[in-house]
Amino acid sequence: MSVPSPCINICRMSAETGLCEGCQRTIDEIARWSRSTDAEKRAILDIVAQRREQLGLGAATVTAGAAS
Amino acid sequence: MSAALRFPPELQVFERGWLSANNILLFDGDEATLIDSGYVSHAPQTLALLRTSLDGRRLARLINTHSHSDHIGGNAAVQREFGCTIEVPAGIADAVANWDEAALLLSTAAQSGERFAADGTLAAGDAFVAGGLRWQAIAVPGHDMDALAYYNAERRLLISGDALWRDGFGILFADVLGTGDGLGAARRTLEAIGRLAVDAVIPGHGAPFADFDDALERAFARLRAFEDDGARMARNAIRACITFHLLDARRIVLDELPRHLAETPLYREANARFLGLAPDALAVWLVGELERAGVAHREGRELVAA
Ligand SMILES: [Zn+2]
Image (cartoon, rainbow over all chains, first blue to last red; front, side):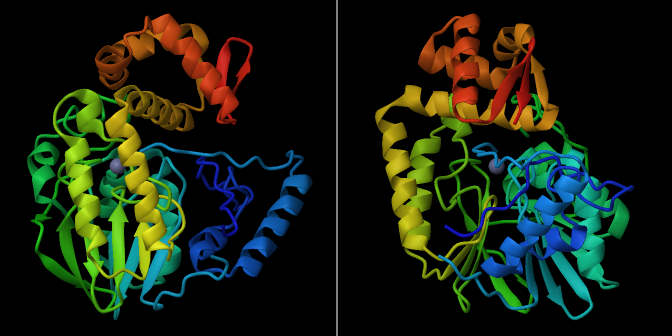
């Protein structure tokens, strides 16, 4: 299985931080996620973890979905 | 599968979550085509993704795979922003034109949408060029009886919508609601797409994948399980639909859940046709399932999305 997306379906960009309020990625990181190699995806997840720490958020949870 | 699938640069996939379907952006010179637009509440992010990727190029056309809220929810906003035309599968044209919220499963499943007008339709057998590739529309009834998939024979690519995911397929609404033979249609659809030569699938949800045969095998196994056990199909549909609702609403008041389950047609029909539980009992089972799956947790008197 490849690196799972950190998307948690909040998908709203914060005007303040320029990051998605759900997954703390930039719009560019979201746009190129599916073109990124696994190493690049892991690097994005590392940055996301750092941002969450700086923003005072807890560790990210990965939700399993099965809807639509 | 460890390496990212390599698509030509003219084909970009925005992998979204479950509330918004994936968006596929295909470039032809300074014009672009978008396939599916996500959920209505995510439209600002969808627009931002498009603006950054279009980078001055013109979005000329938006095409949908099927009529569900997570695929058409951004249509109105995308058209307002970019002035593109919208083409929908021919089978849903009337439901869109009349904005039939039951046929579009909006009222049926307590989901939201924004009305839009389609400029044209696509039918099975029609073809269009996008991303320098010729895509043929293929009927893929089952999850949505009027859904289309788009197939490129040259690069052996399949844009499958919710007819085939890496692990399964979308809810078979017709069977759950008692409005048609979704199971039979889904079986014929899987058999038909199984005859195509496919190197990569771009599904409506989840990452694009290459292991087409394995995905087909999993889909057939799931279908068999549903054919053998309608109650399992119904429980699955209820769980998936409430998960979607929870991702949308973020929290549900526990005391109000039985009423929501009794009043929303999808849950009411699924329960009446296959389970026969009292709404309270259905709610208790459902909350347990969502907690066990890690989809939600209780906070006081509310159920909160994880
Ligand atoms: Zn769908």
